[in-house]
Image (cartoon, rainbow, N blue to C red; front, side, top):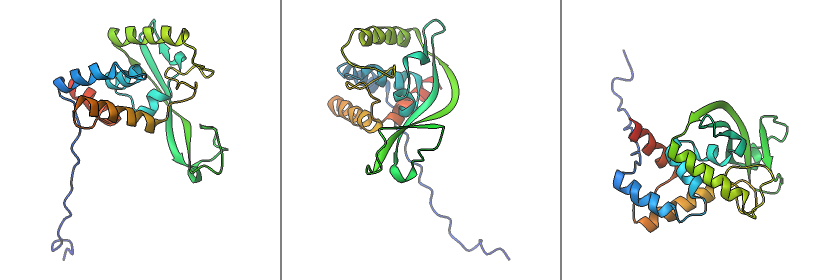
Length: 186
């Protein structure tokens, strides 16, 4: 006798993947151009990296000759209780036991991603702007904050939400940018 025959299976609810339509993409890109971190947002959209991968990129990860970006690290915010200062595979940023959470940079498997001519040109202009700005950048980050530190993933998400609100389109989060790229490539 099979005891599962008389049971009811739970309903599986698959969340809808947010994908920007071509018209939403056009409006979104136009509005993103007003943002300080526009190149980071556009890199996320046109390469499909996770937000932590984009925010952990260093200038040295960009190979202009081969037109590639190398992903070797990921930036995430974790609870302090989950942080292990002895772990050689992570770098804890501004460690303080009294904080509730910390930003950490963790090593990831290395992968190289080809980038389009348009994104390469945008990144070249971004590098020129970085080189001629007064912003500090002691770690050689590709997308540093105004203080020269890593951008917080939560701040990045807040900026995306603000852009989508100004565009009057349904909220766009970093994962929606990944889904949009995958859908357009498919």
